[in-house]
Length: 185
Image 1 (cartoon, rainbow, N blue to C red):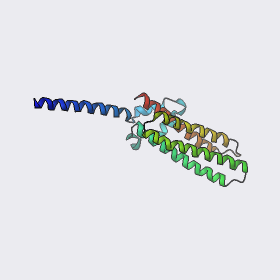
Image 2 (cartoon, one colour):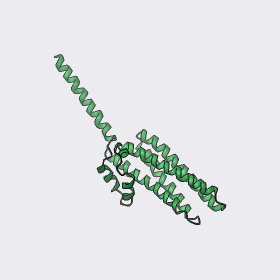
Image 3 (cartoon, one colour):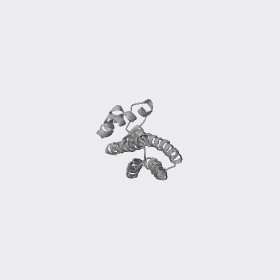
Image 4 (cartoon, rainbow, N blue to C red):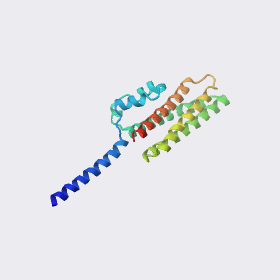
């Protein structure tokens, strides 16, 4: 009789463990080549950039979708910070009042995007996918606003516009990952 109770307890523990592992597994889909392919072929416009950014490396191969999203938010934040430093240099080195104001406006846009990223990480940790969607989605309009403003600067700073587009495209890739993440949960 004691053996039967012991076996039943083991069976209950195994079932509970399997339930816990399966619910955790939904949040930890590993980033395989198949997952990357599925993500990167979702938006044809971003396909080549997506494959370039998510190319299988030893670092990415260790990540699940949660970790990949965190990795991309941090990657985007580094790009935002680096480009904001360039914008500050341009603003400090121009004598044209209008151009200076345009760079200053872009700096504010980049600062807002960094703010969104800071809270995106908190939303991700809290598994607040609606908040995460809103914040990741908020970066794109900030970049478009900056890019549109930069088009009025003479000469047009093409490199900065490319950076705006790249950062915005990273947000689009993260939104596809978020959709994939939620769809598989």
